[in-house]
Image (cartoon, rainbow, N blue to C red):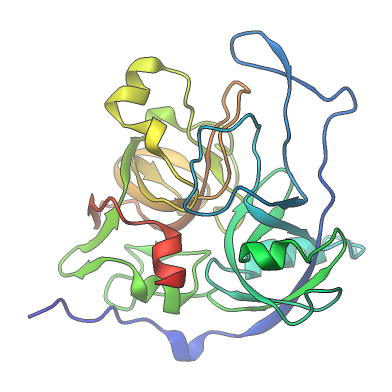
Length: 295
């Protein structure tokens, strides 16, 4: 017999429209970054339409810095006091939500949210290559956001869910029991986590895996990380921002590529966290978003 189904409060969740436009790529005015080994280098970075980097591709082996897969969205609407439409896009859009192109040559095409990137505050969306070729900077996309407020009824509040469409979560390689088992490609120790620490919430953005120590790269097989990989961050709690906590487990998806800047690296968007260790990850080399969105 298989495991019992994961019970969720789906009937209580609100489905709400959010809109973003394809944001232009950005660089520092000089174009330069200073790498962790002291080199001055120039690389492609965040934003735009990335034609040859998608979920399922390497997160490591690119001449790039924080490059975002597929399409990078931002809402350019004006904030009203402390209320920001781009903040709403970043919090309410969940991985696995459908994004429908509203303007331009690709109008009507459908993609999927694949991750969120803090700092630049982008939401990334995957489209097939033939759609990417028709898109242009400024094209608008409508996302029917769904997932904020998700609770796992048999585990709440010991396990918190965020940034994930419940339909997509139900497709993951799960084992429902006294603990929640989930297939992951990599086990990452909290000591390797960098940029993003100190954020007050894991409900948007990401935090980065530092890929600078050669022994750690080999020990934890970091060179094989792919964008879209589901990974376990051990001794990490993301309940109210990302912190080190012995015994805690955080599950996330690799959202963007590696970085050469100290403290940075492939970014992980959180989907599940348990400060009490009630998540029990197990090795699954196929645990990548592309398998669950398109298979």
